[in-house]
Amino acid sequence: MSLLITLAAFALAIGVLVSIHEYGHYWVAKRCGVKVLTFSIGFGKPLLTWQRGETQWQLAAIPLGGYVKMLDEREAPVADHELHRAFNQQTPLRRMAIVVAGPLANFLLAILVYWGIFMTGVDITLPRLGTVVPGSVAATAGLQAGDTIQAIDGEQLGSWAEVQLALIDRAAARAQVGLEVDRRGERQTLVLDLSRLGNEAVDGRLTQHIGMLLGVLRVGEVQAGSAAALAGLQGGDQLLQVEGKPIAGPGAFVAAIQARAGLPTRLEVLRAGQVRQLVVTPQAIVEHGRTIGRIGAGVGMDIAALQSLQQQKRYGPVEAAGRALKQTWATSALSLRMMWRMLQGNVSVKQLSGPVAIADYAGQSAKIGLRAYLEFLCLISISLGVLNLLPVPVLDGGHLMYYSAELLRGRPVSERVMELGQRVGVGLLAALMVVALFNDITRLVGG
Image 1 (cartoon, rainbow, N blue to C red):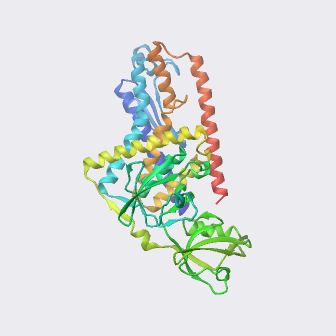
Image 2: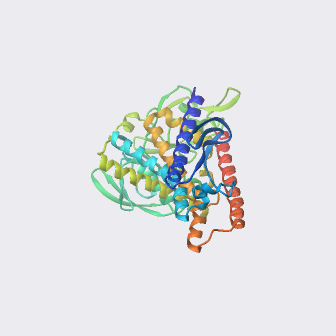
């Protein structure tokens, strides 16, 4: 059932996003008087076709994209009476409008969906820290458990998601970050030094890497005579680190213990306000043909503490529209900055995700609920818009580059240049897809 939900959520997301993108091209092409021959969702052999007016609409076998085929002399002979409706006969500005309409449709979809989310109620998590790992980057900056982050570099923030995105952006630039926090009613100004972070730390788990966590991970029942009991672990202990690495949740802790069967493992816990260092040796057991470690203790998040951070906010139509525009713009700008910093070598290429990872995210968000799935849809729609505007031949941005050059030079780019650009563009996209798929496979194999 879980696999079916993932596949259905992925198929729906791709279908919606590709349809919106291609319809943007289609709609503007029709307004410019260009004849549209085919509107296809998917590539390859058509599985389902129907005629509507002068356009053939179809669903094709490979659902990872789509296209709009227009009348064009470069692809087939065009009758004299229809020359004025050929794409290649349009002015550069009209062609640019048709090309840019696809990505703009993706941005518009995100704005409209965000607008609806902000009006009906958006769930936010307050940025109040539950755990600051001793000796971490966060602790060195002077952050303490209970601090509420209010601003980063002067920008007022109201949710944990906003804090995470702002820190990822600064971490990619290896910046020193100015924090304003509320500590028991008093405003404190701190400096968080992200200049020494490695590329592997700049990802969605950045706050975990630097030792600032929302939740409080506690030990539950400890079995008598177990490895945990022999190590001195007690119920109520707050778990901070395993083998020097911060632990964000129960799943991460269990995975870390399972991977160290029979190996002495260093734990750092907080008990009665004092940090304690313990060493536990997980008992090796065989489960489903695999040897894993167990210590005989339950762990879990402090649910009451997490629930106290949850709020829901609703906005009126005008304010919601403003926030939707701001969210779409901020996400687009962050995507571009992260791409640039990846080229600079400041962000690992391991952050690239392919269709397998996207399908997994689609399934996870669908299981959480409609609002989470819609937010996922917005994020992918924005990413699709940004990606297509990159000045890479074969993408919409590459065509914009050619038509801009034609507008400036007064004549089209030569067929030789376009053919060469096509080869380079296909090569770049193929390399990008290989890296993304490799990352997907690595994540699957790595658990």
